[in-house]
Length: 161
Image 1 (cartoon, rainbow, N blue to C red):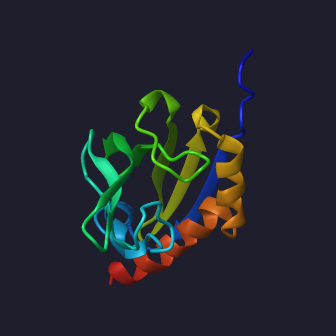
Image 2 (spheres, rainbow, N blue to C red):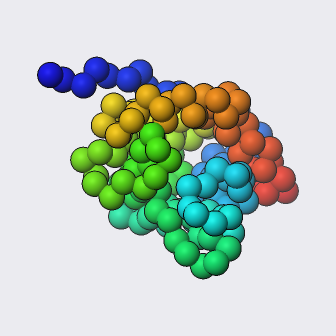
């Protein structure tokens, strides 16, 4: 029996910086905008890291130096596109099996010299163990991916100045 598909989650935001600045702020300055409370490690998060290359990891570093992976970079196309695996299950734990990973694609589209539309698509969620619980958790965080992108937009604006 096939697992029923879970709808794709979307998020979007308009960021008042150039395309290059938006991509750089999202990736290079990932730690500057990712909320500290959004971590899955056993200890408080000291740093959120996104390695800037295909095959790189995205993960958290705890205040005690421990590391907790979230997934891997599968597409790296600056300044237009980034795709990472989401290997966090419905129990908010890292799952090392790539067959049980969903994907997050982030697209950066210029809509003016100092305006970029950031579009996020979280797909293949049904692959995750206890996927429904994860979707409920994301949506309970207050607006899901769009609210997180709004937070990113505010930080990108200050980082661009």
